[in-house]
Length: 229
Image 1: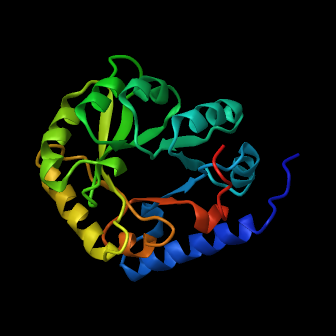
Image 2 (image 1 turned 60 degrees about the horizontal axis):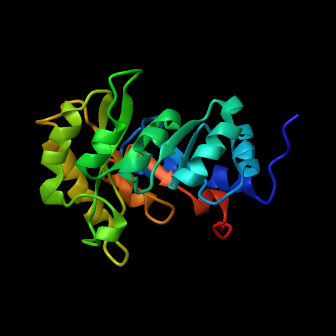
């Protein structure tokens, strides 16, 4: 028998789901258009099992060394694992083995690492950097189209669209609008790339208003993260 969720997890999840639905309706959108990915960064597998008991199926991790063992231990749950962190090229093939989707393609070497002639296509997003900080990952807005062309030509990858993180201290709605506009441009190259992975715990409302389809929400649902091991 599954353990009962503890420490307010059910309440936080229900509250965020309600706020997402309200924001979608305020934007004239159907809440069912949105995929909420619960980011379980640094949390134990026990919390992920509690989330599963509450109906969550899409979970996100941003470090391969954490995601791989979690995915293996929780294989019985049938979760959809979204890799949302900066990806090292040398780990790309290993990530492909368990990831349902990768949200952080930002250079050609990662595309080469993920590409495959075998198995089903892997859904991916190209990450757009709005900070100018190379340590944050992502490709500059002006360089999105060449990387999209590279992804579109790679075997075994299905480009869903673009991903971004709003820069600290900036207007998130304006940041998300710039990525929405870039998403419209890339459809000349990849007509089916209509998704936008953007919006986190503090700015998902603005992301929804600008067309986000995939929200990556951590602490608003999971609570404060444990310290990394």
